[in-house]
Image 1 (tube, rainbow, N blue to C red):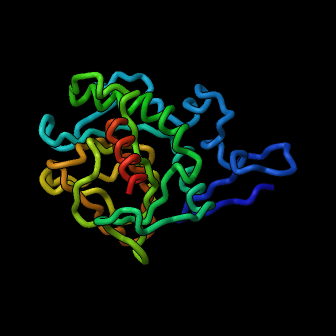
Image 2: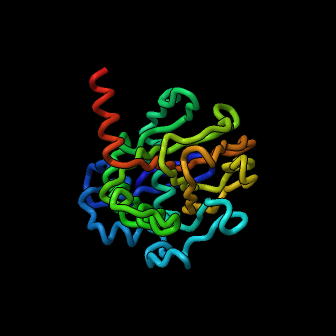
Image 3: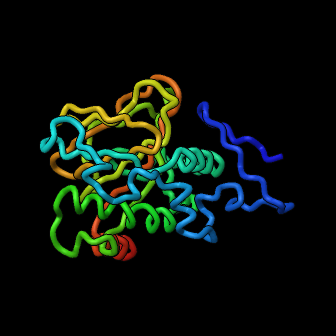
Length: 247
C-alpha cells in the first residue's frame, strides 16, 4: 500500500503500480515525461480553458475594462494536490531567492515540472490567452517567444504569513490558487482595491510592472499554496542568464 502524503489538511495517495520500486515519476505523474501530452492535459488541465474561447472562459475582476486582472480555471484539483504533495515531499524550500521581496518557495524546475508545465500549460493556454485578452500585437508576444520563471509559494502563520506590496519582475504574471484550506490570505491589488483568492485550480493574469502593485494578505490559519509564473520575452531571459554568467 502506498503511503499517504498529507500536508495542510490535504491528502495525496500516489497511484499503485506493479513495480517493486516506485520512482518519483511513478509517485507524481504530473512530472512523468513519458506520459502522452494529450493524456497529461486531459488529466491535469481544466476543461474550462481547453476550448480557448477566452471571452467565454475568462472574466475580468472588478469593474470590466478597468482592473486588467483576468481570471478563469486552468488546472484540475488533481494537479494542484500533486503539486503541493511533490513540493512538500522534496522539501527543498528556499527563503532568499528574491532580493527585495523574498517568499518561501521552490522553483518548479527543481521539482522536475518546468518543461512539462511550460509546454503543456503556459505555451498552450496562458500565453495565447494573455495575447488575446490584452490585444497584444507583434510576434514578440507569440508563445514560442516567451518564457516563464515559475515557482510554488507557501504562506503560513508560523513562518511567512504575508508578502508586502510590490511589483513583479515580469511583463505579466500568472498566479494559480492550489488550495483553499486556509483562512485569510489572498492577493491584494492596491490601486484596484481588489482581493483575489480564487478556487482551487483558478488563475489570475495581471501586468507585472508599474500599474499593479500588489501583496499577499496574511494567512491566519492553515497553509496557502500558489503557483506563480513571471512571464518575460525569451530574449530578455536569455540575456539575463548571460549577464549572470559574466558576473
